[in-house]
Structures are given as structure tokens and as C-alpha cells.
Image (cartoon, rainbow, N blue to C red):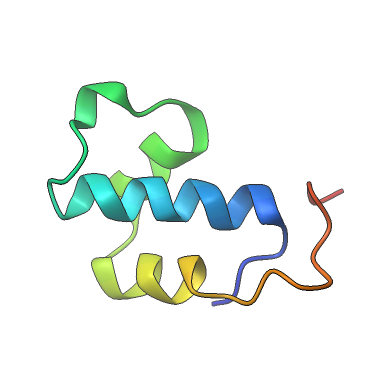
Length: 60
């Protein structure tokens, strides 16, 4: 599932980092916290690796 915005892609990257235990889970907030709990590592990787070109800053 590709990211729909740059913000969503960034949140997926932070959640992926926490899932891999590179970032402490206690530092997660908002969307990244929910993504880390509800999505698999593969789903997060796919969303975080979406090309940024042409994506809006935030989804409407």
C-alpha cells in the first residue's frame, strides 16, 4: 500500500524504525504510534519506500 502523502510516508518510516527497535517506542506519537501497532514490518517498509515526488505534504 503506497503512502498518499509525504507526512504519511514519514510516519511510516518512524514506525518502521521503532518496529526494528532502532527508535524507542516511547518516543512515538500520533499516527506513527498507531501504525507501529497495527501494521507489519513489510507493510511499513512498502509505505515508507514510496517515491516522494508529486506527493502532497498532507493528504486532504
